[in-house]
Image (tube, rainbow, N blue to C red; front, side):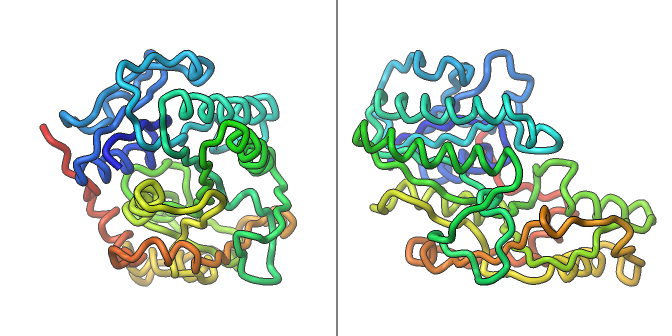
Length: 308
């Protein structure tokens, strides 16, 4: 893999993936929205080329040199907050995925890699989720991700381009959304306040950002078959234990108010992913432990060093 194209280049995962690839001397076309204010988030490197192109215009994307090996479609509108239930916004994302597949084919890419989500499964408690587990999404976001994969898979077969769909679990680390549980607990404890939480009795899985993008890179580099791949860590446990570990790192002995917020069991994720499939591909590095990841995060460490 020598050259890749990436939509969603200024997102947390997009930035980290680009840095991961630049370290491996891979040339990157970073596709960003026109007039985006986030372009300064991109690292600086002679191997990074920026193309301004809105998602609506992907099919008309002008690329001077078509010799790209892999197309990563990471862009997705409405991935957080109330936008996750916005039908029109989520529906358009399905169309954008189709445009990305067509563009990947036009650019001569050998494969296209999307960005699925554990939200596609909904609530499944009986067994650890394997890639073949029947999905039952309960929010528009998860339903749209599932539809994007299913329709994209059919379109990719028609166009004869392999379509890989990593289902990404809870990624944390430097650069994550301010509204995440990890950030909320850290910030609240740093202020000397008590975090008000749900019971946190559901199973969960966190994966550090550098582990996530390493797997994404490997899916592009390796000769892997099309289909679904879980991107998750081997550290699956009750969410409450994760929160307590954050507390022990940030403010040992501080109080935590579990049960202060109500949770609906029919709309509460139960994350217990099977990772055997991805282990056959990712044999390069040891995972960043949750302790290491949180420690690095609160110290303000970056996960990359870009060329200046």
